[in-house]
Each structure stands twice: as C-alpha cells, then as structure tokens.
Amino acid sequence: MPNFQALNSHQHQNLKIKADGKFSHASNSHVVPLSVFELTQAQADYPIVLIKDSQTGQFHLVALVGLKPNENLFNSGESWQAEYIPMQLQGYPLALTQATENDDKQVVAIDLDADSINELEGIKLFTHNGQQSSLLTEKIELMSKFNAQIPATQHFIKTLVSNELVSPQALTVKINQGEEVNLTGLYIVDEKKLNTLASDAFEALKNDNFLAPIYACVFSLQRISRLINLT
Image (cartoon, rainbow, N blue to C red):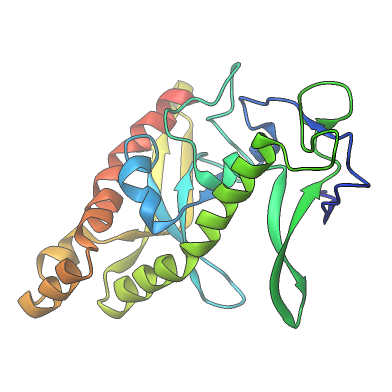
C-alpha cells in the first residue's frame, strides 16, 4: 500500500529518488490515467478507452496497458515498453494532494514506501540548503500540468457522453497458445456514432478542438494487437 506523506525539506532532506525505467509501481495496474492533451501522443502506443467509476458513474480516460486485471504488459524487461510515458507515471513517487478536505490548496506528497525512495542511491530531492533540486522542480511542474488539465479532460468526456459517442465494448482476444481473454467494463469512442453525428454537433466538436483527440481514441484501438504481442 502507498504511504503518501506531505513532503518536508527538513524531515526529508536526505531522501533520494532512484531511477526506475520500468515504473515498477504500476506493475499491478492494467490501466493508466490520461489527460485529453496526451491522447494524440498516447495513441501511437496504447489502446485508449474509458472506464466508469461504479460508485459515481463518472467516466475516466485511460491507457489500457494490460489484458487482465492487475496485469501490466509495458513494464516487462529492463524498461517501459513504449515511447510515450503518461504524465501520471512520470510524476511518481510524488503526488499533488489537497491539504485538507475543506481546503483547495495543494501540497506535494511523497510515497515513502516506494522502492525508488532511499537515502543512498539516486538524485536528491533537496539541495544541502533545503532548496528544491531540479528533479523535484521538474516533477512538481509535471504534476501541476496534469492537474491543470483535469477540467479540460472532464469537459471532453462530458462532451463525448452528451453526444452519445461513448459505447460499452466487450473484447475477446486470443493470446499465446490460443488462450482467450475477455475484456469487460471498457467503453470506447464509437466511430460509427461519430460518422452519423449531426453536422451541427460535428461542427461544435471541431470548434472545441476535440476532433484530434476523438480520432486519437478511435485509431488507438488498433493497438490492442500491441498488447497481444507483449503477452
């Protein structure tokens, strides 16, 4: 279980982050969250789908990185098996969290139980005088960028839903030695519905600059074959 605590330059003065090119913390995750602004890059490597929160009913954009729950096919070998690495993966073992439930102010938290955190090997988070290291600054900027894109991502998803472009999709794929794997609980951007969309609705998507990310989602489904090849 992650052990996130607020980062403190005094308490955590000597902490270092060891490089982890495999992003091992995601080894048990078969999906990785994406921002709408990542889709055109991510589609070259991953199938992009939506999943629904069973409690809230809210949809989330994700890259599919495994064909089974708790399976990640991209962190096999010595490094991550894709050119594009989602922003949320790059930010770990740091995260931006709310200071309190009633406070919108965000604080930087660190997973103290992460395998990459230690005091002996890697790049320090703080300089000798307690200032942020360049690595820490880069990760904070990356996480801030991702969080700033959340409203646009939510607007994109709501637009897809309101135009009835999101459809459930169950997939059955054959992997090594003919084993069949059934993928359920996934939703896709429906190309057939997109092609029959009313012209004014299509024009509205164009004006919102949503066509590129929409087609990225559609084209990305061809990357299912990439997952099969990684099994």
